[in-house]
Image (cartoon, rainbow, N blue to C red; front, side):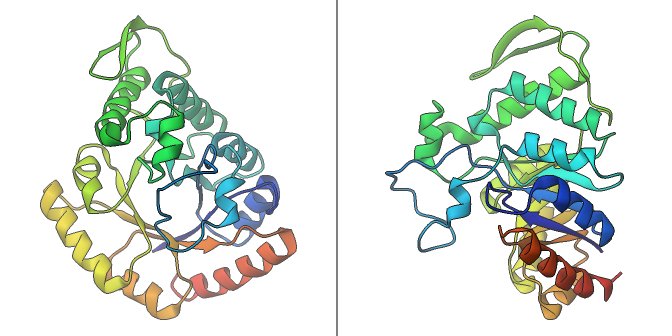
Length: 274
């Protein structure tokens, strides 16, 4: 089982470059970071974690900028979005960002995608929350065309463009791995697009049940990466027994000294299972 880190990189947390170097020094295989373009001051969307929305949601760096900084100071670390809110992003610009980061990282980018939960945030991007799932799926299909075709063309319900040239193409072919986030409602999307399911942390027993449900929907085994996992031996052991491919411990958005202390503790736990 592989081990990585998931986090919200903010203007108050450890900077991207020192974080990337610290992860490689401690033999972590990946870094996935969260995205929120902004948080509306007035909203009715409830925070999925319950209670008040943590400050880190308000202060996230752009993931593609932050991950480029990480990629520039690392050699083998996978850099991924966890998740990119594709229902809020223009697919042509996003396809170029993905391909550019994949190029500058030497093919180390993992495209974690999802539809999000903050309806007011979506609305500010012109996205109708009621159709965000269909929109996300169509934008993925359009991006795949842009990545894989010399002259790409797409005509859909939400995305429409005549033949275009779009470079760079991704280093990894046909495109970077797509890790689909979300719960059971996202399983059809995982089945259609997913090279892996990017699962939010669940107790191992529940995770096992969800993995069986996903297998039934997809008709195949799909690798699982657990985002934001608890750094508890019994939890890690449970995931290992399930055959989870990767566990990503949740690093709090704290300054460098405190972040390095947490990483040391995570690395010590991960070493027991390598």
